[in-house]
Length: 100
Image (cartoon, rainbow, N blue to C red):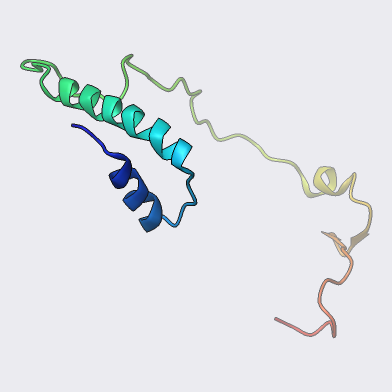
């Protein structure tokens, strides 16, 4: 498929792209070659070829999900900079300090 400089100019205008004449002259044959290659790919015989999204089979290697004991409250609060009534105390983020 042959792409003309007028077609490149028209598409550039639709995309609101500023394009010089030199750019149009360069892009027109390049785009033509790309479309010709795509046409060649359309003619490849794929009879019996399984569809795939990746050329190699991929599997996730995950460890077993095993429940285990978590941190105690004391251990979790051990490095907190400020603790009050068994909870981490943080500076107020909202003005007024009202309830949510």
